[in-house]
Amino acid sequence: MSSIVFITGATSGFGRASARRFAAAGWSLVLTGRRLERLQALQDELSAQVPVHIAALDVRDEQAVRQVVAQLPEGFRPIKALINNAGLALAPQAAHQVDLADWHTMIDTNIKGLVNVTHALLPTLIETGAGASIVNLGSVAGQWPYPGSHVYGASKAFVQQFSYNLRCDLIDKGVRVTDIAPGMAETEFTLVRTKGDQAASDRLYRDTTPLSGEDIAEQIFYVATLPAHININRLEVMPTRQAWSNFAVDRD
Ligand code: NDP
Ligand code: 8X3
Image (cartoon, rainbow, N blue to C red; front, side, top):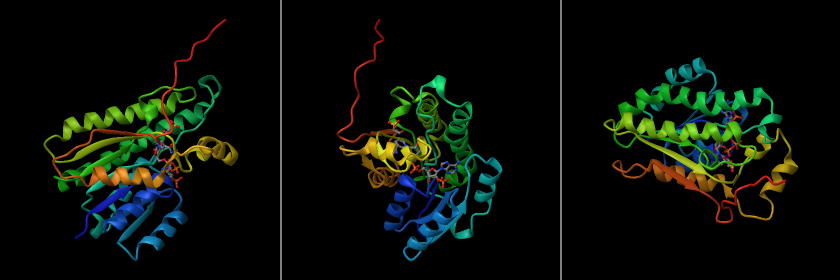
C-alpha cells in the first residue's frame, strides 16, 4: 500500500504544490482547506495518478478537525506524513494600527489550528511509527523580527518551539518533526496579507527572484522522505536574493 500524506491548506501555494509533489512520488493524498471547489479541482487533476481524499476543513474548528480525522476512509487511515501548512499573515501595518480581530485570526489559525490538527493526528502518526513525519510551516519571521510582523512572526516562533518540544516527546516513537522556515515565496500569501491588493502583491515580488510554491514543496518532500533515522529539526530557506538588513535606529 502507498504512503499517505495529510496536507492542510492544500488549496493554494505550498500546500497545493506539495500535493502535486507527493502525488508524483505515488503517495496517497488527504487534501484539506476551506475552499472546496479548489480541492475538487485538485482531486480531478491528481486522482488519475494516486488515490485522493478531500475534506473541506477550517483548522480553527476543533470539532471539525476531529470529525475529518475520525471519518477518514479506510484506505486513507495510516497517515505517514502530516504537513501542517495552513496559515496566514494579516495586517501588515504597525502594531498600533491593526485590528485586534486580525491578530486573533492569526493566533487561531497559525497556532490553535496547527495544534488542533497535530493533536488529532498524533495517535495515527505514532501508530505508523518509524518514518512518520510532521512537517510544520514556520517562517523566517519566527526567528527574525521586522516591522509589521508582530503577531504573525510571534505565531511562527510558536511553531518553531512547538516543533522542537514535540521532538522531545516523540523521541522513542519514530515520528520526526521539522520546522520549515521559508523566506519570501510568491504564492497567494501577500494577497491574503493585504486583503486582496493584487498590485501590492505584484510590487513585493517584482524585479527579484522569490521562492516558489514548488521550491518549498521540494523541501517538504525531502524532509518527509529521508531515511527514518534522520530528523531535520529546522530548515530555513531563503531566496538567494533575500538577506537580513541593518538595525533600525530612531534619531532626533
Ligand atoms: P497561500 O495563501 O497561498 O496558502 C495558504 C493556505 O492556507 C491556503 O490553502 C488556505 O486555504 C489555507 N488556510 C488559511 N486559513 C485556513 C484555515 N482557517 N483553515 C484551513 N486552511 C486555511 O500561502 P502560502 O502557501 O505561502 O502559505 C502556506 C504556509 O506557509 C502558511 O502557514 C504561511 O504562513 C507559511 N509561509 C509562507 C511564506 C511566503 O512567503 N509565502 C513564507 C514563510 C511561511 P483556504 O483559504 O482554502 O482555507
Ligand atoms: C512569510 C515570509 O518574510 O513575509 O512568512 O515574513 S515573511
